[in-house]
Amino acid sequence: MKVNSIGKGLKSSPVRHESPLLSISPFGKDFRAVLIFPGTYSIASSSLAFHQIFRLIGQHPDWSCERAVVEPSMPTRSIELNRSLGEFDLIAFTVPFESGYLQVIEALLSSSVPVYARERGPGDPIVLMGGIAAAANPDVMAPFVDLFLLGEAEASLPAALEKIAQLLRGGCPRSTVLEECVNLPGAYVPSIQGDQPPTISFARTQDMDAFPPCSGWLSPETEFDNTFLFEISRGCPCGCRFCMIRLSQKPLRAVSVDRIMELVGQPPPAGSGSEWRDGTSADRAGRGSGCLPPPI
Ligand code: SF4
Image (cartoon, rainbow, N blue to C red; front, side):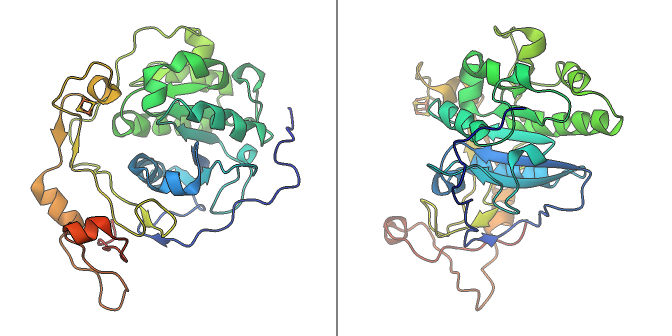
């Protein structure tokens, strides 16, 4: 196993000043995952995908989940417990932009996990990648990734977590775990299917009400400054041919009004320091203390 040196001697990520909205513990489950965003904490926390996937993994009965980000000149370690990547069973990257590929490699280089998939063996974590960039062109990262999930996480990740946990619990070797993942929705396993992926159907969720993506924590250190975010629709009715939204997130689907009101329909607790912002121009322009939804 290679130990890389990029992060040697540098400080680990500081604990962030954030208000959790999810009850997700890094302890008490059979298996341990870390979700990594290939960018800084500020950008990661501004991404609803990062919140949503943290929720999907951390609320799975078999998986504890911690988060990590890739800050310049710092080793990538978990935010919650400052663990190194090699301490996890699963390393999950969500990559929205192609520029994030470099940070994926940087994160692996700053850990004891071999960068190339072919160099990983028993005892190494499974490196998983999803996100629009991965769906657009997984070939580029195929040498570094054990398992891609192409498409929407809500439609692919729960089944993958279930299958991997079941196989690990049964004592299956890493190679068998990956072989068994080939038939999962949206899965692509380069070590088995080759560097040129076969035609793989994107996994897509049909029921936007089941897992409506919304903030899992509030933080002043994001682009949206302590604001609760949620996704009211996915996809786009326009057909711009250059656009990945058009290609990967069709058809257009919406969260129901009732579900939206469940998420945001209650005022924040008195004395919480939070307040409603109703989307007026002043709110949109300003950086207030944000609105606080009920726990989800
Ligand atoms: S660029 Fe994409 S998201 Fe924007 S209008 Fe065109 S298809 Fe829709």
